[in-house]
Length: 101
Image 1 (cartoon, one colour):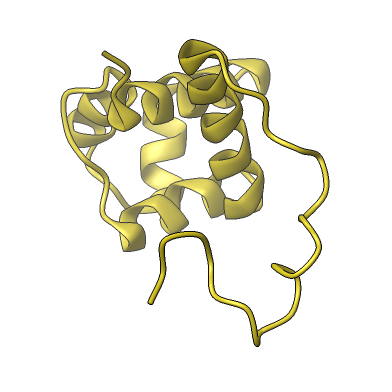
Image 2 (image 1 turned 180 degrees about the horizontal axis):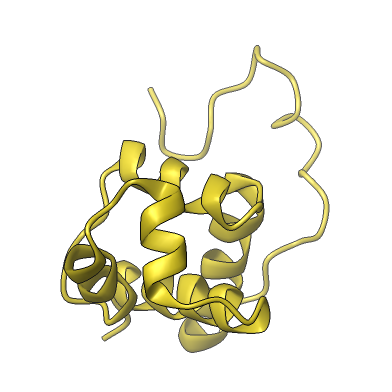
């Protein structure tokens, strides 16, 4: 079973490591406790939307980039293909998302 929190943690850890930064540096910049950020990176805790924004800003990454990377990893695990473009009809505000009422 694929868990969002585990994939999110992996993406955040990979981004931090690729920047050569420590947990302490990112937790300080994001104003998040070191232990809590560690638990998020290990997929043990769910990140609130506010915390996620703080961490992505501390990493200098757009939230959309992080969420897209998580989505891509989940799609690979689920063996599905995500189109690179928004399907026609979903780009405008008049059309609901799939399954929305």
